[in-house]
Structures are given as structure tokens and as C-alpha cells.
Image (tube, rainbow, N blue to C red):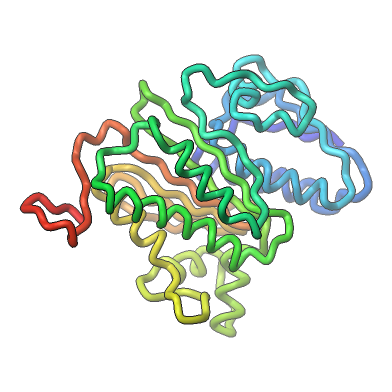
Length: 289
């Protein structure tokens, strides 16, 4: 089977196009998939995490997956961020240190994700933060990973990738899993049928979580959203047939045209932000958080 991958941006249409790949290959078993990039005019590098989550599910169904006819510009960035190494391509050194490299991290290896954040967020234009807020910021991203570990019910792992665009003054980071999706967890928790879009809406409300135990859940995304609001950045959440976007002081909940397995969270940070951020507990007349 050949699937011609179109242009993929970090937006609703980009996630829908990856969902179409998942839908087209849903019944493929013990076969061969050729992902043809010849019609792909551009590929946002951070979306390699979401593409990987789709392709790993396909490969797990005993299919051989190949990536072919990648335009030179796209091949260059996807070799530089290490995504294409799993498909027989050689690495290219990231001389300018603009990539947050693609990684597949097993659910049991939380320490590896923490090391990833500590190593690769440095020097990527993150706005100035006090030490306390910097730790809280990384903890909130780490909680997104933990949510995937707890809720995805996937043995295939979590996928992460990012890209720093110095001239565009933005940093994109995507965390994706190949699990059951937000809708399934919320339906099981509430005991009622709910759409993917409304499941994401429910999950984003303060105090709502399907997590059980002494530690509250849902605080990571809430904290990150508060930061993104002030930073003038962007958040995307895509899960099954639901899509959430916050940007330009507005949020929207929409239905995807196809079913995207698992959950993907994309953070876009405005690296042109010259503010300095601190926690409210760090006493200062200029507290922001």
C-alpha cells in the first residue's frame, strides 16, 4: 500500500491529515506500507512525534513501514532531528542546535523524559524565568508525559519532538502517544457516552481529572495554559475526533474530520517574549504568576 503524505503543519488540518493516514491503514495487517513524501510541500518538524505515534501502531499490526521520496529540505530536517533514523536514513548533525530531537520513550522510563527536557530546552529561546518557575514549567510539561503514562494504556510508548525557529521567534514541542485517547478515559470515568470534542472540554475544566489517588491531576496543562496566555503562544490538543486550540486570546473546540488514535499535545512558545516570569510565592512587586 502507498500513502501519499501531504503537507503537514502544526494545526488542525495537519492533525486531520495524520488521522487520514491512520484511517486509511486501519485494516492493514501483515502487509507493507510505503509512506510517500513526494507530495509533501512542508513538514513541521515537531509533528514527527504525532506521525511516529501513527506509524508505530501500523507497524505493531505486523506491517513493514517504509518512508520514501522525501524532498531534500524535509529530509534534511527529519534526519537532523533523528526521526528518519528508524527508517534507514543517516543522521545529520544539528550544528545550529535548533532541534529538540525525536525520541520514543517507554512508559516506564520517566527519567529519560526528564533528562530530555533538562538537556534540550536549554538555549531554545524560553522566556526568562526565575529558578522556581523554571522548575515548575518543566514539571508541568513532565505531567503531560505522566498523563500519557497513566491514561494512554499503550505499550508502544510516548513520542516527543520539537523545533526552535529563531527567526520566527517560536518554539514548538509536541508530545504524542498511541493510546486509547481522552474520549475513552472520560467515558469510562463518567459512565456516559461523550464526544471527543466534549471529552477534551471536560478534561480542561479546572478540577476535572480521571486520575485517581492522593495526587491531583490536570494541573500541568492548566499551568501551561496560564503561561501560554501571558506569553501569547499557542496550545493544541488532538485526540481521536476532537481538537482543541488556544491562540490569540481565544479557544476553540472542534471535530476532526478523521479519527486520530491516541492523544497529541502541542505547545508553541513565543520566544520573542521579553517578560521575566516568576511564581507568586517568589515575592516581588512584578509577580506575574
